[in-house]
Image (cartoon, rainbow, N blue to C red; front, side, top):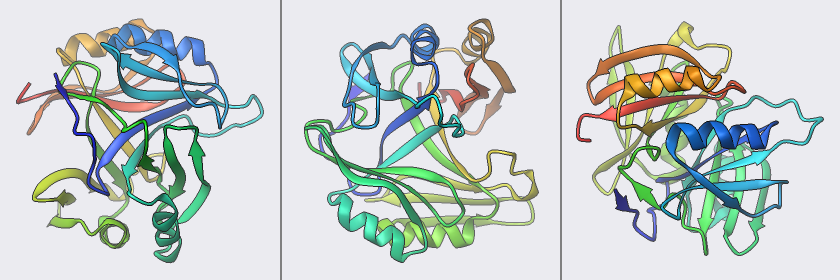
Length: 257
């Protein structure tokens, strides 16, 4: 387990959050799966808690108003030094800003946006809350990937937004971009063509686990379900799963774990 750096380079994924209908039941699920404990966070958008490991913030979970029937999905936040300026850039590059920018108490300033492909993401200007404070342990975010139809157009959007260095792999079988900042990979874009499911373009959160097979089994025991069974990949053993409300995420035991 390592503590994250205090300041993230703009464009670095720095936080993930989830909006659900049943906050207490969702806390039970992720508490049992990842070992998170919970404490209240900023309430600007309604009831909200932060999941913690050893007292360090890992992720956020909020409760939707009863009349809001939005897709239940994990959302990636990208760091920024100026949420208002980044929001304007999002609009000028063909994206939309649906919420904010607004202050989240003393924690920081945030906005929720969508890229031109429709994938929703957040931006976070840190103040008291820097974002995910721990890396490398069971239950911590380890990677963020945009699943989309094709990467070329939306890749230009993100490149314009945060000046990523982009590594592209495009062939008859692969459409993949790695986004790099300061010579290190921070996120990826994966074009899946007609295989794009009903979720449409979306950001996928990968969570580190100690044992992928055991964690996938626990997901089912806790009322979720396994979408893609555990399998060995280039970077470790991974499985794609969904929680009881349908939020999809990937669990992975990294090869470096």
